[in-house]
Length: 126
Image 1: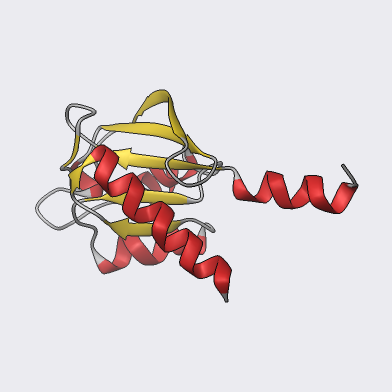
Image 2: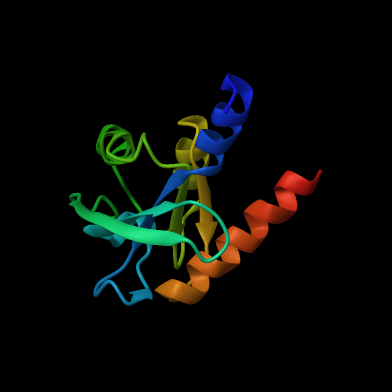
């Protein structure tokens, strides 16, 4: 396999962080979540659970410390997407500035991951 083909293959494999209280359902608001489930995605229906990562929830009645928020976001710097049930505009902007795409995809973990993969495939068509 030549270098360009190998690079294209590597670009298709990415990590996703999903905010969940139980690892079954994406049901956590970004600022209130303390556990994120990390998956490696390698194409249609091809993903696998890697690990959990914990953070200190930063949302305090709609207020938060920007420093604490940046610290939490930095724990996902190797992820391409963060999936949550909800995320505020300020936090979403900070996540995006870090090069990560936040997505509100509440629901069953597998269904949300499948939706993300479909979205990613559509993006790659254009």
